[in-house]
Image (tube, rainbow, N blue to C red; front, side, top):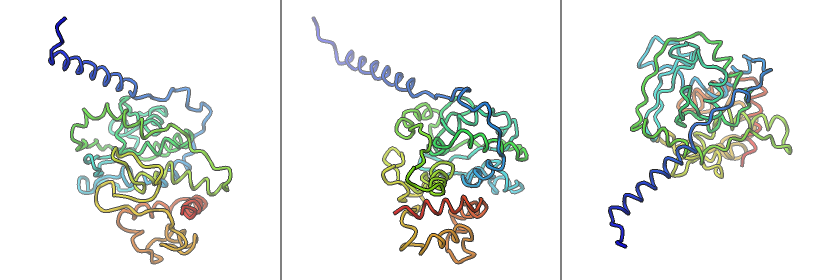
Length: 306
């Protein structure tokens, strides 16, 4: 029997490779939440949604771009501000309830899928520039409350800007493979050995606050290294570094927990350089506006990190 030619071998390898890739993409296709996974008896809490909006700093990314639209209301998340990342520049979309250019026609299920599964309204993978890798740990009830708050805002007609990400259409189906490394699908689990305030702070920092998205270093696949959580690392925009959030109290930046609380609450008004300007400016402004109990919970959690 004649030996197969190199051409046949190469063709066979290509066929097997294509079959394997197709199988991998099928296995990692978007998996939306089933409608029955949402609590049927949930009553929306708009005020809680506003709190989560502030903790999450949604306006920091989803605000308008003054350079593009100088007349836009900067207090509304109408989208368009550029978000530079190592893979290109994204333009976060309009989160106001405009039915054509915003999320006005998004059902609770659609919104929950984006937040908890990273699945778009078109049932496609979202790029993880949207930090669903942290939001996945939120409770469904909190996600629905956040949606309720967004739906209470004035609708702004602001068409989305196209992202400047090379080969994004080709890359999108492969995000499911990345999700295998980055998503665990687990809800936040309180630590029974810690007080309620600490657990509340841990939840706010890890889930809606998504602090780890910037303050945790990433591996070669751009997956956050959980073993080095909040240890700081390169800025996502590749402009400088993001500092560690560990060891903040008792030796490095703040003498006591009360000192850290004052820094978050009052920023440079109390002499804390860099907290009311630069990258932390809007973060500090948001923290200054949340419920005092939540701010103290965040401080309790961060102060415990060594």
